[in-house]
Image (cartoon, rainbow, N blue to C red; front, side):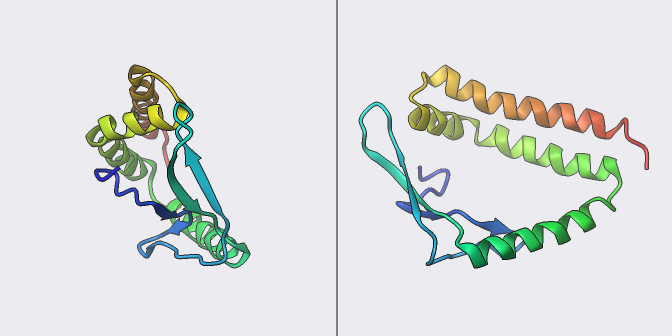
Length: 129
């Protein structure tokens, strides 16, 4: 959990360079280890005001994002895939813990995300603006 910066209580809403939004109004969702029934961590859901803010920011971000040429967007997705590669082991272990999967399956889930990033990078080279 430490490698992934997961705390006992985590914020569930995020946007832009400001990062995670502290929302004191949101309900907490508890993630349990299905094997032991123990709580792994809690996530504070976005309340109504936070949700509206995140949705508004997402629309604005999309308006800017769609103006960026596809190959440049592909570079961002490549960076995302590389970040997943760097954290594959702890992310795979977390998937295994939360979903009750064997370790190989948890790591396979993360590998699928990496593969999709690689596929999307290839597609970005086929799009012409």
